Length: 291
Image (cartoon, rainbow, N blue to C red):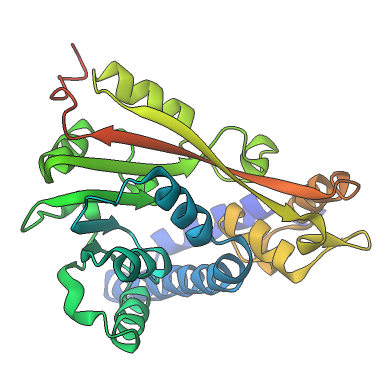
């Protein structure tokens, strides 16, 4: 019988431990390059699927404008803006100053190019190039925005407290993550993401005043599946949520994910559901989570 994938990986790991010390550096370098290639490929998959088809910029822009959260604001800091589609629209619409933390270099470059094209580069007042968890902001902001980027922060009370301290008087922190009602979360297609309802419970236990809203967008079913097969966009979405390129998923993993989509082919749409936490500066100081 052919060896299983796990057995093969175990053999590779056992052999790698036997590699002489002078050769270990090249081996480590090769592994790092392989991880980087996979990461780069996942971001290319993300770029194909999200901005054109599943992006949240329009949804959140309209929601923010309808809520009037930026009517009195003069400055915005974005955590993980990606290409900055939402942020630059907000800057242009409301005349805001913008700061951001974006660790992915090609996204920073894309944001800066678009800002220059729109003649908004002078509005960018702060650029943080590392992960937000380690960022120390140079000033305060009226709105700090995290749209599907707080997953990298998680339930860290120190980062949350530092973020609230970086708000101007009367400022607001807005965190948007997937809702438990999101199609991809509910069907188990998304990797183990922190959902808005759980994040809201945690924030409440810290004694912080906040409100939780649900923002939804309907996607036509034929965007992801057509004629009994996933479309290219469907494959890209499944790959990104699986954390691996489509071709590297084993046959059973691909079949399982395809079946979930195909069960929904009779529907007219999928629902993307985002939970938006709005936490004002006036919230109580976060207590020690052990209390």
